Image 1 (cartoon, rainbow, N blue to C red):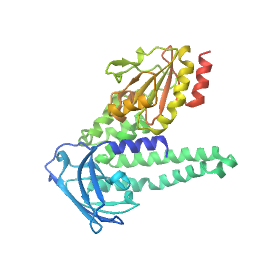
Image 2: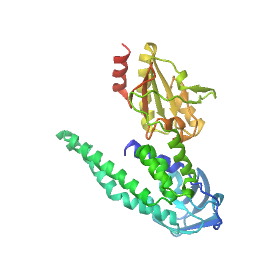
Image 3: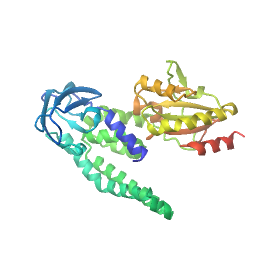
Image 4: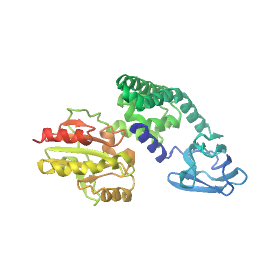
Length: 367
């Protein structure tokens, strides 16, 4: 799974839908048929990181009913077993929903009774052919046989073309469904991947109601903040809070070379990279190398714990807005880890440098 797709998946799981209040019924129910689960197995229904309700399986069935959260017309929820062994993300509505799932295949569970979920299912089905092609090419590229034959260059070209085609299919669906909250959700996640121009065009065609959802407001915020910065551009300054609560600007971090490092406590590749980055920092700090870490966490405790556990000695900031971190929006960060190397004139000289590649670049520029 690519870091962009992984990143997008994590963000989808984290957000919750916020539309205008409506006069629709304020209760909902779920009638579930779940095959293969033992009697007394617990299922938990979560909305916006909080457990709304829970129920136990009895004879392959369970039922959940109650008030719909905040009287919203539609909301993203997750239904899962203990420890998330089996889980399903879905769009709920204030209506009678039915769910049919199977142990071990629960992510393929079908939901009926939710028009919003139906649109989401249509989106997934529309993208499936492109996803299958992308996944097939990735398996070929990373197979031992392909690597032994050294024919990955041609396959990588095919993969990039397939990924572009998949992205275009996604954009086409959003263009054809400007009124759907599903489109607003997807664009809020993938906007920086699509690019500012495509995102602006899609947003402009959204209905006014869709623009007023929290997703629509996030898209507008991205379009307002995004600078589409490239190598050889001057950096964009910003200010966020340190773990101690003081405000720190990027411009206040001095060094011949400053690495603007985007990461998060929940990002596995980021955490795996940190030991090498700590060594590189120790090697080049006295020569004028500095790092400013920008966390895409949304909670202070795990952010602080990761800094301590990974022994990160450089300055750290965050606005604790998760994937909607304003600095990440300014720099069009659509996957982490991601970094930008800035020289003493304030020019972005490189980006996405990792491991030995970063070390060699620093050695070359800090002779």
